[in-house]
Image (cartoon, rainbow, N blue to C red; front, top):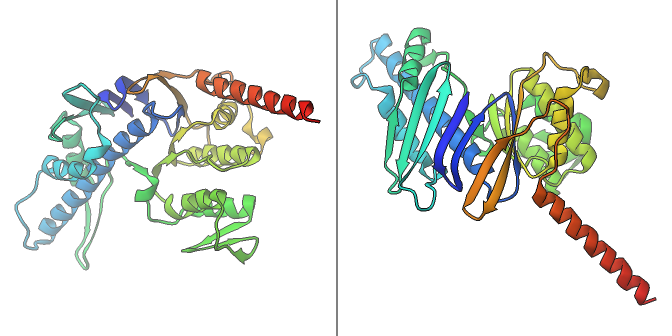
Amino acid sequence: MRFEAVNLGPLGRVEVEVAPLTLFVGVNRSGKSIVARALAAVTTALARAEQRYAGALAKRRRGWYAEPKPFLVDLFYEELGNFAFDLPVRVGARSTVVRLVYGGKILVVERDVLGNPKVEGDLVEAAARRVEETLRVSAREDFFDYEPLFYPWTTLNACNRLYPAAAKWIATAFDIVVAQDTIYEGGTEVRNLSSMVVSLAELARRGGCRNVVLEEPEAHLHDDAVFELAKFMYVEASRGKGFLITTHSDLLTAWIAALSAHPDPRELGVEIEGRPPVRVYRFHLRKIGDAYVEPVDIRGGEVDMDEAQLKVLQNLERAIHAVKHAMRANR
């Protein structure tokens, strides 16, 4: 899937290819989360519209009384209204335009500064045909099923199913067990959760979607745990899951790059079912409200650290040196 946008948040223009494992890395306010949420907004709105459209068709096929057959594009407009704030217009622009390209089909969503949406392209029509052709209806009960055109990219708070693979990984790697709303660490119920436990528990409890957007999943994790997280996501991507990750961590990005470039990931303790495509994009901030995006070449398994992060590390090194100097002077 290709995602393109014009005048979205701080970005004048952005173009990214969304792979089963995609990383957006960069500093705050550079547009990482805005792009991820915009992709999630448009794809989730279409998925929810498909669900409603399939439900209406199922009623008609059963012979139940139903309203006139709806148009999927009208349902999409309605669902898109729930995500208005996920398509912010760039300051000074009249509108933002988001474009999805999938399977040769195109969906263009434009939102002006007043929040009015406009939809064009043939992707919605393709989704309607897919629902109609694959819809399966049970006459005995209110049940229907269909094959969506594609699975949406969904933010973590919109996932409400247990993610068994994540729960098993967390239990194995960290001795943290998630049982509905109760969390056990080392066999003991945890009431005062550490930030790390919260982050991992949320992934297990609310990460059941096929394609999930994770914002800064490495937050609060130790370096060794970041490697475990990278391996977990790489393995799951090889099994058909999708991850779009926004991160500040060059360490997480470097581990993903290393796994992708390694000739035999099994030497790193990774058992995969094929090599999942990986894409990495670095978001740069010129100034507040003005950012740009560029792809990162990870074929060598190495990732250059962002200039802003290098500056932070240099300042930290200077501060530590000053503290040590002051301590020596006060002896």
